[in-house]
Amino acid sequence: MKASKVAYKPVGLVMGAVSGALAGMVFKQVWKVMGHDEDAPDATDMERGWREVVIAAAVQGAIFAAVKAAVDRGGATAVQRLTGTWPG
Image 1: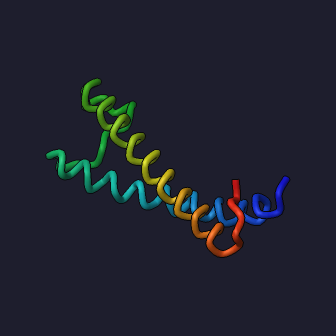
Image 2: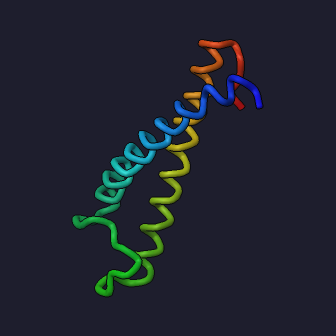
């Protein structure tokens, strides 16, 4: 295993936590913009319909994946600029 990959592991873990928190904040704002006053429904929320639950999960998943990819890519790019080596 390359040294840059090992050195990047702790950075990647911290950035993963940050990206999760950021994605949660982005999702809450997007959910409000979509016209919902309440928080997104849980899958087991009996008072919400299938459509709303599945749409919320799909939107949340897409936002999480996009934010995580952007944060991971930005972190890898920063490591390459600092060390001259891509951490992958």
